[in-house]
Length: 202
Image 1 (cartoon, rainbow, N blue to C red):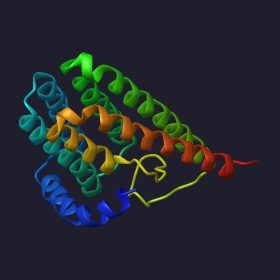
Image 2 (image 1 turned 180 degrees about the vertical axis):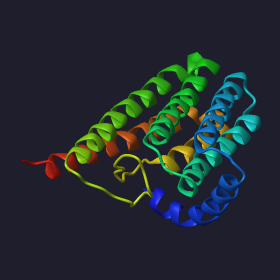
Image 3 (image 1 turned 180 degrees about the horizontal axis):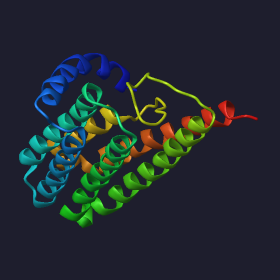
């Protein structure tokens, strides 16, 4: 829901930084890989209970997630880079939720499982929609230039990061935040399914 607005705010400085990095020989795929390392470090810090370190790594990792596209725009966008970017995002999201479950299984295992289930369902609708949209030649830039078709929803990347930050600042509220966000993610998946049912009518 917020990704479109956030792109208007963050794209200009990111594109500028991307051009500087590209001129200095930085590869977009390297930025993506480094962002994943930071994201996995964030998950490890959550597991060990170092929440402020986890927060710093989360923000740094998400900065890389924005910079890799900016570097690619300044150099050359590739399908391989787009694939890597999407896979790394999914790995990061899952690792953070798993880390909270491992940190306190008694309190967090069930809400983590529910949240991961919602991510799974949402990912299925997201990727299926993108695949069929590509088959039909549909394109959109409402969420910036993407390798695959991105559909809007209540729960997008911006909302996910905001919820992760809230979980780090208020870990005792993890279960409430996980259940609440899972509901939003499932609503997003349902709404995308309804749109697909209408859009892809033969």
